[in-house]
Amino acid sequence: MPLQKWQWKYWHQPGHIWRSTSCITMVGVVALGKLWGRLANTVNVFNGERLQKAISERENGLPLVTVSNHLSCVDDPTLMGTLPIRLFTSPRKVRWIPGASDIAFTKLSHTIFFSLGQIVPVVRGDGVYQQGMDFMIEKLNQGGWLHFYPEGRVNMTKEFLRFKWGVGRVIAECERCPMVLPYWHIGMDKILPNYPPYIPRIGKRVTMLVGEAIDFREMLAQMRHENWTPMEIRKKITDVIQDEMRQLKERTEAIHYGR
Image (cartoon, rainbow, N blue to C red; front, side):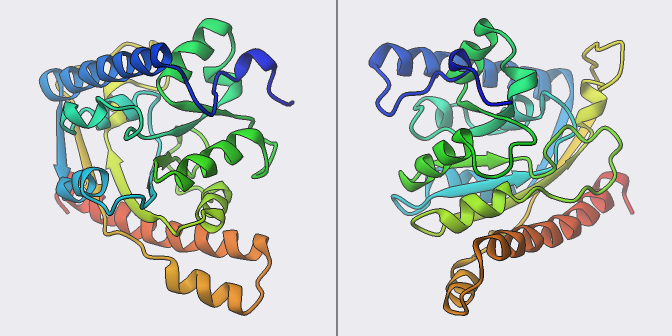
């Protein structure tokens, strides 16, 4: 089902009031995530400097795509709360993230709130070619930061899911090959369980491991030289990310469980 008109609240040139309200929204949500993750619980981040440098020190105009697993609906604010709050004071530098239209954009008030938080509505089942995906590629072409949950949903079973090809498309079709930085985390579903009663918990431990950046420039050049189809290219990119994430998962489990 396509997006309804009221579910889309983005403009190519948002006004000052929208940008200011967006900044207040994101700083407030991340501050709450920081309090929840740091004071009420314990979030241990390994190689966190890689993420901070990618956000704040990467070459001007270089797009950034971060990818992670998805364990809870509060993954984003809680884990972003591990970063310095100053990184969220400019909407132009804050991450964009896809959100399911049938969950986050079900009423106008929700649409406005999540849009101010730079969450982009995507319609599950509509494939890689849709309005939200085009918009996120546009943001990457402006040197922005996009975070992706390639599992495509909150993974309540914790099985290793087949990744969706949308992440492959945005990387392949970006005008400048983005920096791709993966991270894996464990324990977010303990902070906010995915089953009733949905009561936030305290005293839980979360482990987050940031991997090494993946450079797709050489691979993309070779695939284009060999005339791979767009579908083959985005599948290959997604497969590479999935393999890297599988290894990152194993390393994170070793840290978290002391193996």
